[in-house]
Image (cartoon, rainbow, N blue to C red; front, top):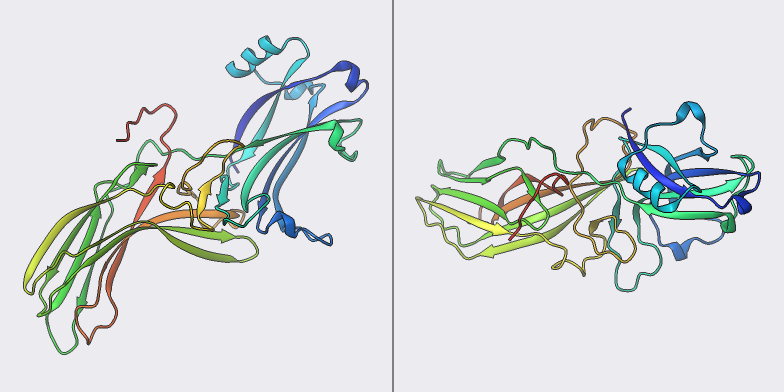
Length: 327
């Protein structure tokens, strides 16, 4: 299993520490129920990963070269500051928060990461609140350097007692979009039937797979357009529709997956989850994906089901080394 090496700095008061040591615990947890419901010893929270290590005094064989950020902090904080390092396994889920409703109180449901530093004589000693400090951190995925191929999906709907058909095709100009970037959907309809297509519905939907004790999927539209464009019998139609999924237009939707946020900071719609090994059962938490759905309402009383197709789209943050302008 691959891991990401992360670094930090702790500031120690020798008079308070005395003969004790400083330990650091990294916890990845999934809260799946409201915090105010934690009664009678029942907790609606599952720890997905816990790792505790000694940060001070440092273990000689585990010492590594300081990062640039650590060097700056050590210089600023003085001699009582000490560097530490920890690893985050790659198979852990990203930080995701489920948007609470207007009446929900307490900590929101979702996956979060927490760093806790505490002083004790041994790692097995009980942690007291007065001897510890906590810091919430986030695990974030950035867009890959090489995006996938241009997505395109098509389908043909045949009519009962007729050799005529209705062909629907949808494509995107690219697979990867950044948060806040408009998504252009190219819709092509070939109507060989004797009926008229009277309107089209295009939407961007978020799918959240909750992987806990069992897997459940929740879907929610985050951007949609309903057009009165008509496609007459024995004709073709082609048009590009633009949709921009943002949190600003979806703040009232309870249970919508958002990127994990830190205190006093706003956030955005959850980024797409990129899983390299989909068969890995250790991947828990919330897996987020997006699809663009194009739907043609029923054009014939014989065909009650609408004609619809879904195109997968990836929404992520750009790598910090990439400069992006979103208009």
